[in-house]
Image (cartoon, rainbow, N blue to C red; front, top):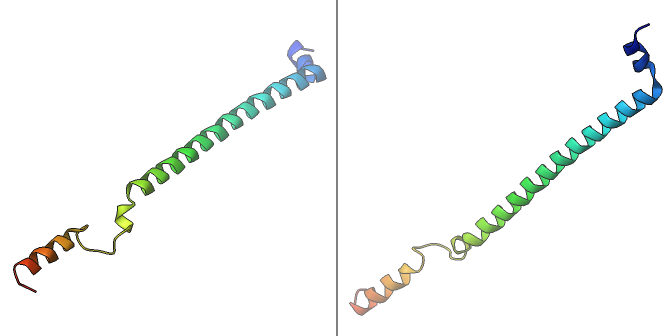
Length: 81
């Protein structure tokens, strides 16, 4: 009988190996979950930043960002209305 076959049949060794494998798998899963959490948090921060950056795009109904008021003022001073 070979020693490798005896080692594979040893229940203590087998339990230790399975425990180490489970621990390794758990560590990898935790690392993947942390990466997903960080990626999601980064997306949330970027979305909030882009919403804050573009608030003026949604505040007015149209026109040239306030310049239409200047055009009306100059039109009325020259008598063209």
